[in-house]
Image (cartoon, rainbow, N blue to C red; front, top):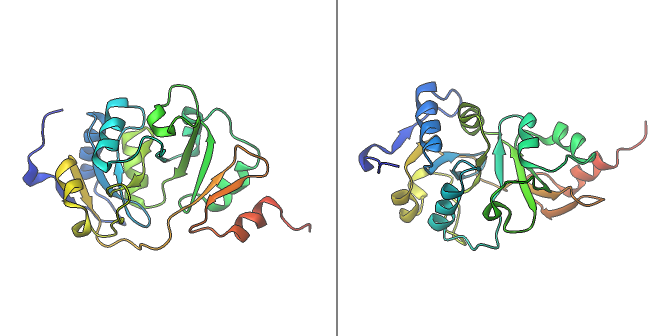
Length: 220
């Protein structure tokens, strides 16, 4: 894609009521294979078209992310899941109903055609329904799943303010959507629903006890 004017890559966006024109521009960057920084619930994320192999490769290069580390994907509607996953296990239904949008990333068997970069060759893909209004409306404006990995160099701290972004990230991306200071705190809980019972890979914003209460509800 044509290199952007570096003076014009940072756009301020209302976190509660993002302007359609800004979302349209951001969706255009994604469609062109670009990389953008956008707000998620806790931290700023790096977004690319999850189905664009070259864009995913570029994301890994920008982050310096090891090939053995997968990247999660954000959707704006659960109806998009069949684009990404082989099947939706029965246990996933009540978990999605209770904890989506945001807070919980579910790991499924990946569908055919997904980049091996996204799955790190595991055959599995982490998916979350976007929770932040900007992330959700960006995904809806683009119309396809987008990556939701944190906007940091691999191993470095995440950023909950745009001024805290690693300079290497700022200089490498095509667009930055600045929604102000994010809430920070714990990231999403990551739960593998490909096994029975589901297994917590990382406990975060949703506690193990909350998940257990959904998977094993008390009678009555």
